[in-house]
Image (cartoon, rainbow, N blue to C red; front, side):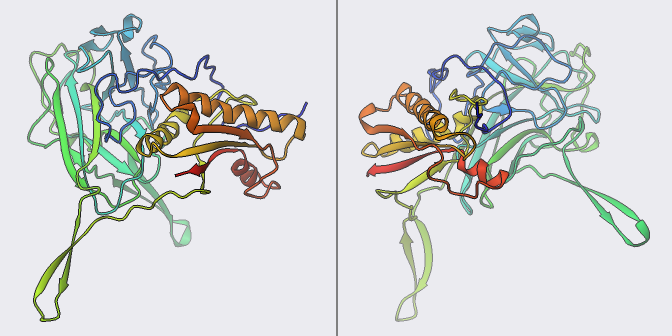
Amino acid sequence: MWINCCFVKFCIVITAINVFLISNAFGQDTNDLIYNPSFEEHLTCPNKIEAYGEMTEVLGWWQPTGGSSDYYNKCGKKQTSVPKNKLGIQMPRSGVGMVGIYTSKTTYREYIQTQLKEKLLKGEKYKLTFYVSLSEYSSGAIATIGGLFTTYKLSDTVREMLAINERTMHDFNVKEKRTTYFKPQVVNPFEKPLTNTQQWMKIEGEFVAQGGEQYLTIGNFYPSDKSNVVDIADLTYLLPGAYYYIDDVSLVCLTCGMPKQIAAVSEGGSPITITKQKEKKPYEVGQVVVLKDIFFDFDKSILLPQSYIELNNLLDVLNKYPQMTIELRGHTDNYGTDAYNLPLSQRRAAAVYDYLIAHGIDKSRLSYKGYGAKIPIADNNTDEGRAKNRRVEFSILYF
């Protein structure tokens, strides 16, 4: 039997695609650009603290380094339960889930990362908010926990502070290593160390987007001597550094959709101001949109959790335009026979269809169809081209 290549190499078994029926159960702002902001939605209950944890239980979040960020939930086992767990005692600020990271008095660091619902718009002002609480098991506290927005996904195997390491080769085989520190757009003030072990402390800040940022990483991006490390007598000093729980992350645009002021000069030479509403690109009947981040298990039509951010983006579009009707289209590359590829593409389109219906979209607005390998959009003679051809897209039938 021919086996069609999958979108990813992961092998995660999911028994139901409606795992996300808790959506908005904790009052999430519909304008929030953070997916799973309170860490409630998860694949499995956390079992134990791992030396090199991968944080695979919580949906939409991961750790970008070799550190071991931790996930806690009321349903977790003893080491990862709430309020008492292996690394401290704390109730989540809301709901039943939260995460924890070392920000450290030493060189050791942990971070958490997520992909935003949409890319940030150049020149628009955004506000990031999240909450932290210091574990009483820590051996001290710091000040400079912050949020870094990037256009690309950060990924490194280090267990130290995230930084940009550049290596340059000069004449006579002379090598130069240059380290540049990241500058988070939002960071807790240096003069206000985060010392509370009982209450949740708010970290909040506004910034103007450069445009195209689509990933958020949270942690301490400063060396210890610039983190305002403080010792606290009431701590138990069971841990070698400063450990913080994190909950309720939100990102909202403060200026998106607001009228823009444009300076101009009248015929008489007097300055005037013209108010221009931001133009938005409308959808059109017949437009085809590729869902770029839809993933399936190998040779199957079961949606993997990495797909949910893109699927929720599609849900947002359909909820925003209730008159829109679409056809979901599944496609494969040219590996295998038509008799095999056609039903596989049909099942994958049907999986997206079922997900949308399970999340409140009326089935009268949806249809689906599999096209197999009949409509390629790239060269099937290359790995890159075949990857592009393995896709799910939607065509707008009415708008």
